[in-house]
Amino acid sequence: MAPRVGLTTERLTQAGATLADEVGFDQVTVSELARRFDVKVASLYSHVKNSHDLKTRIALLALEELADRAADALAGRAGKDALVALANVYRDYAREHPGRYAAAQFRLDPETAAASAGVRHAKMTRALLRGYHLDEPDQTHAVRLLGSVFHGYVSIEMGGGFSHSAPDTEETWSRVLDALDALLRTWPPAS
Image: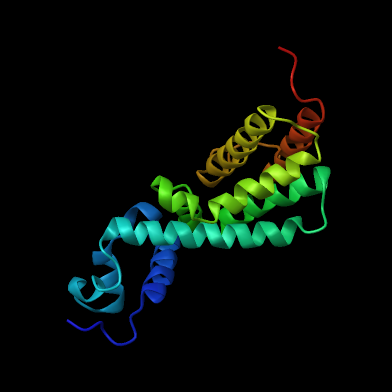
């Protein structure tokens, strides 16, 4: 069976990413994508193997987009400026592309992860942390801390968990980043 004219793996991945932003990453399937293109599911199998393959491709796209944004935001910055820039990239991306942001959290097999833009994320975060003069294993602990705080805050905020009380989430976000900066400047914490 020849591939349907106009359908490419890249086009399907982009459409899947758009679908994820509209309906949620968990709802993305090859069947739903076929409905969007008004084609039979079988027409898509020459481009994507199955829904897991499609989700993996969307995750890789999201990681690439995030890495590109982070690289642009971090250029020429150091210390707290770099920390705030990186944090805002994640938060802004999650707000603009909630499905893609969820896709960026999709568990990849080790080989795919090693070849993904996730490696660029780790390198950029470690470069940012060099400005705080952290050695191993403290640098790895700090990478995990930043990822946990960024993702945790963004996830709670997007889920509406902060929408029922004052102060404004912008003020809290700013204070969270101030606290992270202060913590990183005094790392490692006393045992």
